[in-house]
Image 1 (cartoon, rainbow, N blue to C red):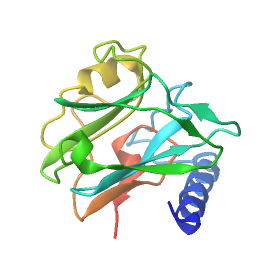
Image 2: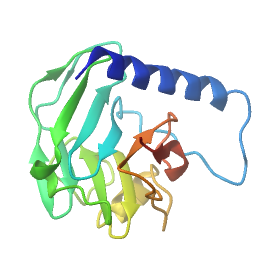
Image 3: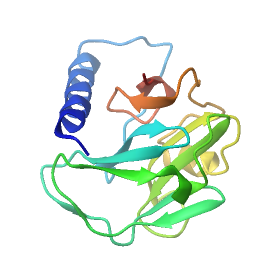
Length: 168
């Protein structure tokens, strides 16, 4: 991961946190990231990769964490240092099609358990784990991110569709 990309993600998250404190559009609810969601999905590049970023000020051991793009699952391993991002290749999670998909980050292999999911994003059509994210209070029911480019990037410190925009 290039340093400029990590800095760009951190800058976007910092601006979003500041903007969230300055008022918002009440018509679009912004849901908080789950308390354990200090490692978050910050980018999905369709057919290429996704990016996980550690937003904590301490390292996170990813052992036991799982990514899900149902029916594809990937167990994670290794440490992610503070502010560090890592790319996960799309082929390891079913390709991450622009037609529709999801990425759920779980702290265990209990993919139907609301207390196991720590971050989530769904786009286009088709997302099997949405009910789990809704039950966990980190994603709104019946919503997905609109796809209008080669990928999506998180711009708000939130787990709602409004936190995501098309990437360049």
